[in-house]
Length: 194
Image (tube, rainbow, N blue to C red; front, side, top):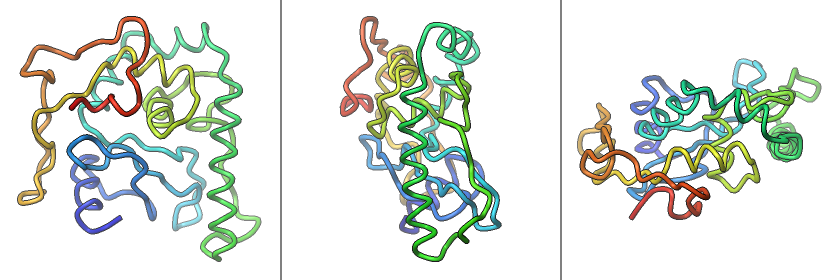
């Protein structure tokens, strides 16, 4: 990430990003919305979450889905093994690159499981939504996207001229609340409005 992206992510998360992250998806304002986190952090700690959601509005809306029982509902209603296997393959490919580049020792402890380390549950909808945003075929991520609706902020949440604080659009669309997608998730390229 360049310095502005790293600072923007730090402001959005309220802390510095863990490890050498890469921007995996940007919002319609060009800000990092999802970052790819290395599967092994610089101190050698395994980290199961390959895709981390950074967009503050998305984080808040996904939190509402979780608070409303979304994890339980999706775990009971969806088959997630294929999505978890795809996620694990992607994470393992990144890990192989890091080992090949000498940035992670061969035989180091590594994360296991699917999205966010899940083993057969929807567990972390933030992680599943982030995975879906970067083209993962995850039914829980798609359902979360449907419930979250379009993220149509009218202004960037982090200003390049003043990157010290986050401005969160409270309801999207001038305070009218999210535009929900009743029948299907929005197209990935339309999630961020505009």
